[in-house]
Length: 298
Image (cartoon, one colour):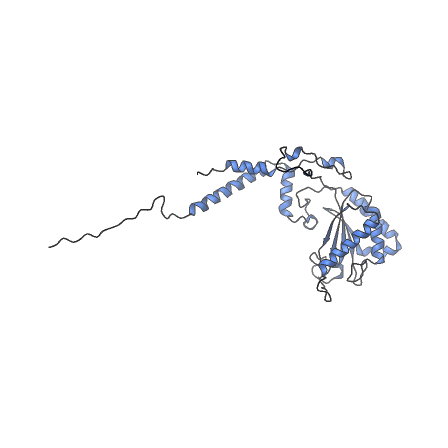
């Protein structure tokens, strides 16, 4: 009997872990993310109340429309300074002056003055046939010109900045494809700005012009309601001055922390409002987090 030939077995060995896959990378990434979240929470817990309010204000109102969401924080995290007594006095004075003019008495129901977290909001609400503007146009009517001139006479004496917003209803233009409610709302706000500045409002007092078209309806259940067509003039609260980098200074060369830099003085703002501390530097937090992470081996 002949001996059976033994089969030849070849073993292939794979070094350094073989086909273990990259699951460890996912686990490591989750660990690093959890650690960063922990450090951020610890940092927030040890921060001042102003920083906590700024962070909360951003997440509650990331677009900066504080007057819509009812927050007391501007979109950049700067706390809005309230002066309700001064706003109430201004509101009462404007209402009395409007009632004193016979031409404007009949329009009192179409003029709404309210106090909001951002300041005093004055809304000029259109009627079916147009009240303050010619129908479908940015041309001011006689009543609109008279009312805006009255408002300009009072607002030009204030240190507060102004924001003017234009709104329309949902009815679309059918004769001009290149001119929509977006253009109309912005043009109406701009027409109000031009007239008010011609009557004494300072050139730098109007800081923003906004055209919302039909995106912020006053009567949401009826997008075609005439009262959705309106102009809003916001007398903004005086806000804390934000430090700015001097023109011509290189950003990378700045060695002093932002809190030591003197904020620009605004002659129209009280001195007490311009002495606020600058927000905490992000570089310090990122540097601390980076230092605490495990270093990679080459």
